[in-house]
Image (cartoon, helix red, strand yellow):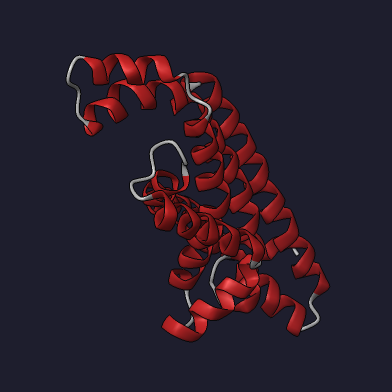
Length: 204
């Protein structure tokens, strides 16, 4: 149903923005999770380490549709529950990979900065971040690609975007419209793949 394409621009943009904002919020949530979840830098290992690992496990174990249903019930229909669902779902993967990257760093630069009186913040900025930044950026970009796919289907539970249009077309048995929405989702995913490939070559 090519006539439907003109009505898909706004939902397609909403789907793309849900993925972007959800990933960004997820990255912000990952900062304390990765810090607490890395055994070599966690501030109080008996408590903060298992707490952060539990948080990562819960995030990965619960499907994004379930998270979206929870947030739809909490804040109502629209893009906001989709953003929250994407963010919480992203924490498990990004934080886990970041924490493991921190655990695998070369301890030499850390010891060198500490030996000349560097504080924890200086150690983090000058010894840890330069070693993990390429890997962490790669993980974030990869998760963003996945989140474009996730955000495209979250509308099925009322979280906005193309998924909501898809749900409406299915309910009215307009299978020509369903195919049109599927093509639009495919187009967004392809554009996301191209953009992430360009960013990866530029940054990493």
